[in-house]
Structure formats: structure tokens, C-alpha cells
Image (spheres, rainbow, N blue to C red):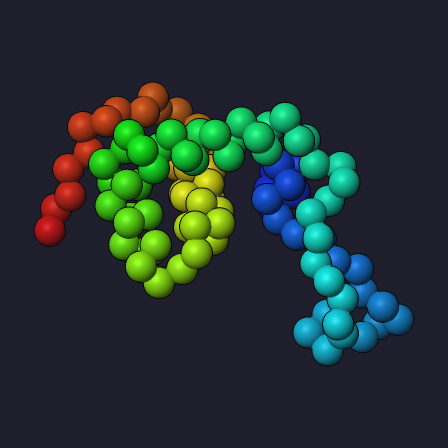
Length: 102
């Protein structure tokens, strides 16, 4: 979660006097401590991935039928981050020869 906040991808809120966040009308906002350059790079990576990666392009086209572009772009960013962390955790390099089973 800290990495998502560092990217400015996760929102931050503050509790007020012990009242749960669900019951308060606190607006969620992106942290000012976010690395804006890294956030911009992730945004460009998501746009390029939607344009050139076949899997993410199909995913984005399917989601664009029901959601606005900004939401779909955030979903693609999240998918890219999950893929990056999966590769790092496994200690592997990215291979573009993935084939779906079904």
C-alpha cells in the first residue's frame, strides 16, 4: 500500500475524532508526498500498454463500454503495477509469449 501512495495512486483520508471514515463526508485525495514524475511515467506506460499490448487493449476496450476512460486508465495502471510486483517476487523477466488456457 505504501508504494501505491508513493505513486499517488492510492487515496489518503484522515479520521476525525474516532468516527469511522464510512460515516464521515471526508473527501479522499491523492497525497502531496506522491512522486509526481513516477506517477506521470506510470500514466504514460498505461496509455502505451492500452495501445500496443493486445491483452490490455482487449481489456480496456471491454471496460470502456461500461466505464469512463479515466477509470479504465486507473485499472490498467493497477494491472501494470501488479504485473511488475509479480515479476519481482518471482525473480523473472517479462516474457510476451503468454498464452491463455481457455
